[in-house]
Image 1: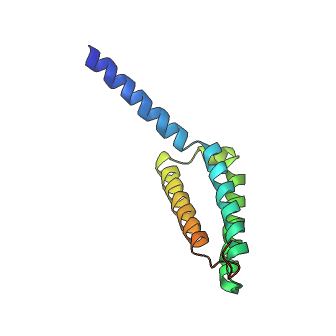
Image 2: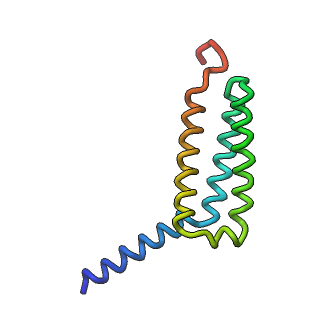
Image 3: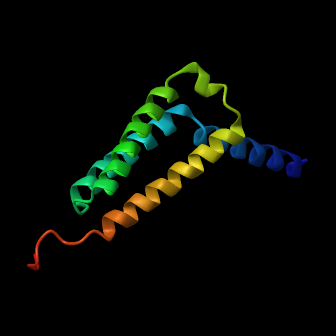
Length: 111
């Protein structure tokens, strides 16, 4: 009997965790965070035109995703598609953080 209750509680916890991960508000928050990181990367990156074009595309796509997350159509996406989108956003965030960390220092002097 206790085992059954424990299993039900664990199942409920897993369902709640999944629901939090695919909540549209979390996608909107992630999109804003990635957009802010892209803006920071554009300020720190060298003056290459192709890099700035990529960063501009990221900013536009994150704005579109934030708008899409507010619409009812987003809730109709399957759980699998939302999980794939979430994974892609997490990978994009990591790549932006790596590019920001690897950016050259703005001055030669040690601060």
